Amino acid sequence: MTAAKQRIAVIPASPYALVAGRHWPVAVSPEPGELLSSWLHRTAHGNGVPPRYFGAFLGATAENWSARLDRDLPDHLLQVLADHTGVAQDEIAALSLVPDPMVQLRLPLSPLPSAAPLAAFQPSWLQYCATCLSEDKNPFFRRAWTLAARVTCFKHGCRLRDRCPSCGCGVAPHRQDRLVPQQFCAFCGASLCKATRGSARTVRQIETLIDDLLHLHASGHRAVGGRSIPDLLAASCFHSNANPSAITRLSAKSRYHLFRDLAAGELSLLKQDSQCARYWTQIVQAARSHRPLVRSFAGSIDIWHEKRPQSQNVQAELSDLFHALAQLDAGRKAAK
Image 1 (cartoon, rainbow, N blue to C red):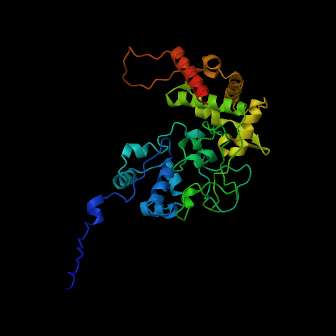
Image 2: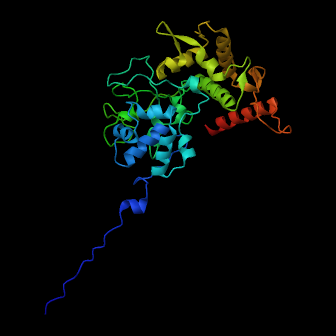
């Protein structure tokens, strides 16, 4: 007797477009505090496209395409990203640096990064915490790492780095032409996660105070005279290799040494803008006791209100504001 032949049923699958719509195959959710360019690199990697070629697919043809989108995200591209990723437009827009109340303190986009190591004092547009990248389930770059006033990771207390520890080239994940995660150098392929040294307590005190001041600025406050806090911090020039340089033009290592020297009382400010020099001096002096805003700056910051309709019954008292900041500082210390 001959056994009956088994038949294999072949059922044509539905076209992918009908199942997934316009969405790309892999959905990548933004991480808290993530920078837009970092999310774009992860989205490219997750969908099988090296970041270097993903920009051309989006119509962003500049060499440092993703870094430019951090600072200028066109509406039509925002719509494209929302349509293909399933992430809401407002969530994507929040990853960018636009609008940017800290624009004066952002590390500037440098000329096209090359495979040559950066000079010791030369800045890079992006810095990072090696420990954060090594601990992340999906390594990503933070928006806060683009600030020139930040040289320490507030979570781990270690120094930030702005170049590859192996080859010395700047951070350039947008140039990665292989399907590897962005915690690897785009030039030599080495890991960026080599641990860095701990940051000095006096340096962290200055950074914490500046961070509180920038939170005030983001809430709409201005220093006496109407100048913004980032403007006062960024307008001063410091001696660096015998050349006067703004803080945004210094490397992560140079800025760390600057903060350390300031904390030691070596105020190497150029007196081109005495108001800025006085402001930095106040910061250094207040940071030593770290009761920064309650005592030293209570009389130096005015509340600035936008001209918009608001209830007359809701008036923030300056004393309440500084009390809240004192609680913020106490909570930060308790969390360490």
